[in-house]
Image (cartoon, rainbow, N blue to C red; front, side, top):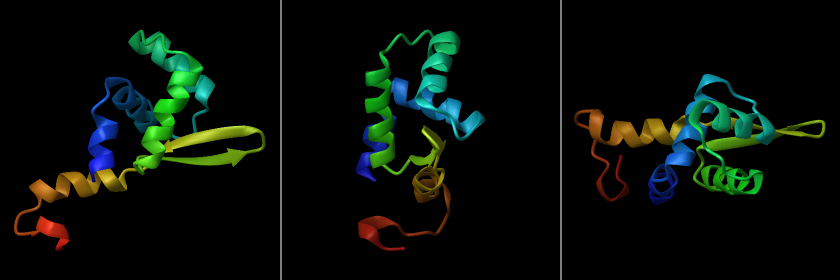
Length: 98
């Protein structure tokens, strides 16, 4: 769960997730374009690629290849697990118990 918090701590990564939440299967080029046009984020493609790698490592983004295109999608499971930890009454999640 620590990786999820680390990934969510960065504003650019949260913006990437916002864009993927509106539409899955986006390329790096599409995400860079959206971040510039909608949010004014002028990071390099390499920087956005590194943010995507952090999100993928935390399990928040999945990647699949379609031909030569690498497509990114949001993975909602870790976010659901995170919120249920505190919002689902009676569920004991301390010390890894379920």
